[in-house]
Length: 214
Image (cartoon, rainbow, N blue to C red; front, side, top):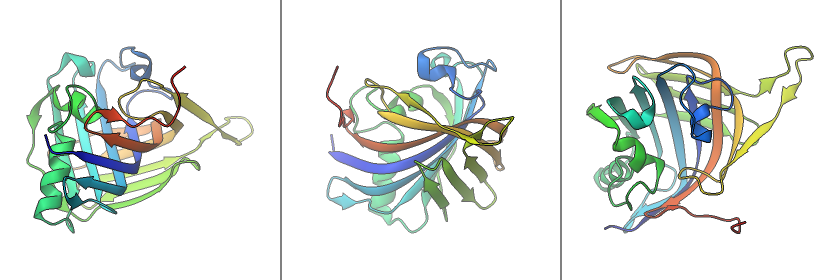
């Protein structure tokens, strides 16, 4: 197993309402799960290969709950990545060199039956986790925007967090609103639904935890 570790930021938009039942071991509230994700790797490595500053993204479609499988997915890796960086990121994203089900990458990969060929292209990601603001743009494939949830009466920003001490993706996520349009082989449309903004710290064995266990 090649040792790897990444620290970064993510924006995830899915078809659930704010909160997302999946975060609480529930079923998707639309009966299916469609999702778009963008990640900036601020620091990271795969073996001796540095991954600092690289961007990646993915589109997922599950016809029912994620754990029921039959998912479809496509992965994107920044075109500027060299061959070793591409291989490392794709191995991480497909759950390889990872303890069984230790990360969201490994869990999701186990539920996908139709994996499209990866795309190496320019990926534009702007992401402010604490501000619950972000954008993921890949020409001809993804347009995702994230923003704070606002009070429907006053218009004031409404802040909420999800804390998962034993989660396989993050420890704390800021929750906002997001919308997505995708093109290409995996198409989804999401309007003002669950937007997840989080700092990531992951390695072969899952989330690297900063908080002491309760």
